[in-house]
Image (cartoon, rainbow, N blue to C red):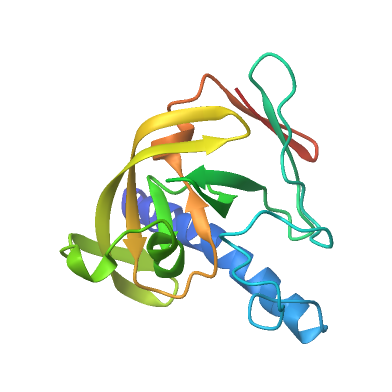
Length: 183
Protein backbone atom coordinates (compact mmCIF):
# COMPACT_ATOMS: atom_id res chain seq x y z
CA UNK A 1 0.00 0.00 0.00
CA UNK A 2 2.75 2.46 0.96
CA UNK A 3 4.74 1.43 -2.12
CA UNK A 4 1.79 2.24 -4.38
CA UNK A 5 1.32 5.58 -2.67
CA UNK A 6 5.01 6.50 -3.06
CA UNK A 7 4.96 5.42 -6.70
CA UNK A 8 1.90 7.56 -7.35
CA UNK A 9 3.45 10.53 -5.53
CA UNK A 10 6.67 10.20 -7.56
CA UNK A 11 4.68 10.06 -10.80
CA UNK A 12 2.70 13.14 -9.92
CA UNK A 13 5.89 14.99 -9.00
CA UNK A 14 7.54 14.18 -12.34
CA UNK A 15 4.56 15.38 -14.33
CA UNK A 16 4.07 18.50 -12.24
CA UNK A 17 7.63 19.68 -12.89
CA UNK A 18 6.89 20.03 -16.60
CA UNK A 19 3.47 21.49 -16.03
CA UNK A 20 4.78 24.05 -13.53
CA UNK A 21 6.78 25.77 -16.25
CA UNK A 22 3.68 26.10 -18.38
CA UNK A 23 1.63 27.29 -15.40
CA UNK A 24 4.28 29.86 -14.50
CA UNK A 25 4.15 31.26 -18.01
CA UNK A 26 0.33 31.28 -17.86
CA UNK A 27 0.42 33.35 -14.67
CA UNK A 28 2.75 35.84 -16.34
CA UNK A 29 0.44 35.85 -19.38
CA UNK A 30 -2.38 37.14 -17.20
CA UNK A 31 -0.07 39.88 -15.95
CA UNK A 32 0.62 41.01 -19.51
CA UNK A 33 4.14 39.64 -19.92
CA UNK A 34 5.22 38.59 -23.40
CA UNK A 35 4.40 35.00 -24.35
CA UNK A 36 5.19 32.77 -27.28
CA UNK A 37 1.82 33.69 -28.76
CA UNK A 38 2.01 37.45 -28.20
CA UNK A 39 5.66 38.10 -28.97
CA UNK A 40 6.47 39.08 -32.51
CA UNK A 41 9.99 37.66 -32.60
CA UNK A 42 9.08 34.17 -33.82
CA UNK A 43 9.34 30.82 -32.08
CA UNK A 44 10.79 31.53 -28.64
CA UNK A 45 11.83 27.91 -28.18
CA UNK A 46 13.82 27.58 -31.39
CA UNK A 47 15.51 30.96 -31.55
CA UNK A 48 18.41 32.18 -29.42
CA UNK A 49 17.26 33.94 -26.29
CA UNK A 50 16.71 37.65 -26.72
CA UNK A 51 17.03 40.15 -23.93
CA UNK A 52 13.95 40.56 -21.79
CA UNK A 53 13.57 36.97 -20.64
CA UNK A 54 14.17 36.49 -16.95
CA UNK A 55 16.20 33.30 -17.15
CA UNK A 56 19.92 32.99 -17.84
CA UNK A 57 21.10 31.62 -21.16
CA UNK A 58 24.00 29.70 -19.67
CA UNK A 59 27.66 30.39 -20.10
CA UNK A 60 30.64 28.16 -20.67
CA UNK A 61 33.48 28.94 -18.31
CA UNK A 62 36.83 27.28 -18.90
CA UNK A 63 37.00 23.64 -17.92
CA UNK A 64 33.90 22.48 -19.80
CA UNK A 65 31.27 23.88 -17.46
CA UNK A 66 27.97 25.50 -18.28
CA UNK A 67 26.23 27.63 -15.68
CA UNK A 68 22.51 28.28 -15.84
CA UNK A 69 20.74 30.91 -13.75
CA UNK A 70 17.41 30.09 -12.11
CA UNK A 71 14.53 31.70 -13.95
CA UNK A 72 11.84 33.81 -12.32
CA UNK A 73 9.53 30.76 -12.45
CA UNK A 74 12.07 28.80 -10.33
CA UNK A 75 13.15 26.54 -13.21
CA UNK A 76 16.43 26.33 -15.11
CA UNK A 77 16.42 26.78 -18.89
CA UNK A 78 19.17 25.88 -21.33
CA UNK A 79 19.71 27.16 -24.85
CA UNK A 80 20.49 23.94 -26.71
CA UNK A 81 21.55 23.20 -30.24
CA UNK A 82 19.96 20.18 -31.88
CA UNK A 83 20.59 19.46 -35.55
CA UNK A 84 21.94 22.96 -36.08
CA UNK A 85 18.78 24.53 -34.62
CA UNK A 86 18.62 26.46 -31.35
CA UNK A 87 15.98 25.16 -28.97
CA UNK A 88 15.28 26.56 -25.52
CA UNK A 89 14.59 23.70 -23.09
CA UNK A 90 13.59 23.52 -19.46
CA UNK A 91 16.02 21.33 -17.51
CA UNK A 92 13.92 18.53 -16.01
CA UNK A 93 15.85 15.96 -14.01
CA UNK A 94 12.57 14.12 -13.42
CA UNK A 95 12.04 13.46 -17.13
CA UNK A 96 13.61 10.16 -18.20
CA UNK A 97 14.33 11.38 -21.73
CA UNK A 98 14.48 14.61 -23.70
CA UNK A 99 10.88 15.53 -24.52
CA UNK A 100 10.38 17.68 -27.60
CA UNK A 101 7.33 19.69 -28.46
CA UNK A 102 5.96 19.00 -31.92
CA UNK A 103 6.95 22.52 -32.95
CA UNK A 104 10.57 22.06 -31.86
CA UNK A 105 10.79 18.60 -33.45
CA UNK A 106 9.54 19.96 -36.76
CA UNK A 107 11.97 22.90 -36.51
CA UNK A 108 14.93 20.49 -36.41
CA UNK A 109 13.59 18.59 -39.41
CA UNK A 110 11.81 15.64 -37.80
CA UNK A 111 8.79 14.37 -39.75
CA UNK A 112 6.63 13.87 -36.66
CA UNK A 113 3.69 12.36 -38.52
CA UNK A 114 6.07 9.87 -40.17
CA UNK A 115 7.13 8.47 -36.79
CA UNK A 116 5.08 5.66 -35.30
CA UNK A 117 3.40 6.22 -31.95
CA UNK A 118 5.62 4.27 -29.57
CA UNK A 119 3.82 4.78 -26.32
CA UNK A 120 1.92 7.13 -24.11
CA UNK A 121 3.29 9.92 -21.93
CA UNK A 122 1.57 10.59 -18.64
CA UNK A 123 0.87 14.30 -18.18
CA UNK A 124 -1.30 16.31 -15.83
CA UNK A 125 -3.83 16.53 -18.66
CA UNK A 126 -3.92 12.76 -19.10
CA UNK A 127 -2.15 10.29 -21.34
CA UNK A 128 -0.90 11.64 -24.68
CA UNK A 129 0.79 9.84 -27.58
CA UNK A 130 4.55 10.07 -27.91
CA UNK A 131 6.92 9.16 -30.70
CA UNK A 132 10.52 8.23 -29.92
CA UNK A 133 13.50 9.35 -31.96
CA UNK A 134 17.29 9.26 -31.59
CA UNK A 135 18.94 12.69 -31.83
CA UNK A 136 22.44 12.72 -33.33
CA UNK A 137 23.59 15.24 -30.75
CA UNK A 138 22.42 17.80 -28.23
CA UNK A 139 24.76 20.64 -27.27
CA UNK A 140 24.53 23.05 -24.36
CA UNK A 141 27.17 25.78 -24.20
CA UNK A 142 29.85 23.66 -25.85
CA UNK A 143 29.02 20.45 -23.96
CA UNK A 144 27.90 17.99 -26.61
CA UNK A 145 26.24 14.63 -26.03
CA UNK A 146 25.84 12.28 -29.00
CA UNK A 147 23.11 9.71 -29.46
CA UNK A 148 20.43 11.22 -27.24
CA UNK A 149 17.11 9.40 -26.97
CA UNK A 150 14.13 11.74 -27.24
CA UNK A 151 10.37 11.67 -27.55
CA UNK A 152 8.08 13.98 -29.42
CA UNK A 153 5.07 14.50 -27.18
CA UNK A 154 1.77 15.29 -28.89
CA UNK A 155 0.63 17.67 -26.15
CA UNK A 156 0.85 21.39 -25.62
CA UNK A 157 3.79 21.31 -23.18
CA UNK A 158 4.82 24.82 -24.16
CA UNK A 159 8.54 24.07 -23.87
CA UNK A 160 10.76 21.09 -24.61
CA UNK A 161 12.35 19.30 -21.66
CA UNK A 162 16.05 18.49 -21.25
CA UNK A 163 15.77 15.17 -19.46
CA UNK A 164 17.94 12.33 -18.20
CA UNK A 165 18.85 10.93 -21.63
CA UNK A 166 21.09 14.03 -21.83
CA UNK A 167 21.76 14.84 -18.17
CA UNK A 168 22.83 11.31 -17.16
CA UNK A 169 25.65 11.39 -19.71
CA UNK A 170 27.28 14.42 -18.05
CA UNK A 171 29.99 14.17 -15.40
CA UNK A 172 27.98 16.27 -12.96
CA UNK A 173 24.82 18.32 -12.56
CA UNK A 174 24.91 20.53 -9.47
CA UNK A 175 22.58 23.16 -8.07
CA UNK A 176 23.84 25.71 -5.58
CA UNK A 177 21.42 28.48 -4.74
CA UNK A 178 20.17 29.95 -7.99
CA UNK A 179 22.86 28.43 -10.22
CA UNK A 180 22.90 25.06 -11.95
CA UNK A 181 26.28 23.84 -13.17
CA UNK A 182 26.59 21.21 -15.90
CA UNK A 183 29.94 19.43 -16.40
